[in-house]
Image (tube, rainbow, N blue to C red; front, top):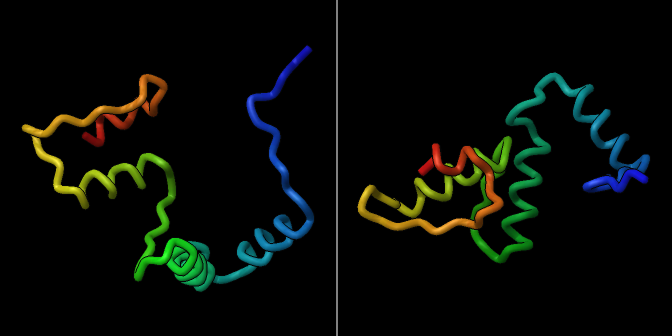
Length: 88
């Protein structure tokens, strides 16, 4: 028996939304990104939100924004992205 790690829940609505973006002349930094960031900021109750292309990029931005330096200690989970050590 195979047990999947995660089974995606993708409906026709999500497929249509992705197809609509793929038909736009600008895939990166387009109007959907700006709308997404605004909605996430509103949901989180903050002034701004920044979307990233990957978890690693997001972690990099977080570490940089916190001004973590060489003398600081950062504790992470043992089951963690290997690239996190490169970010730090």
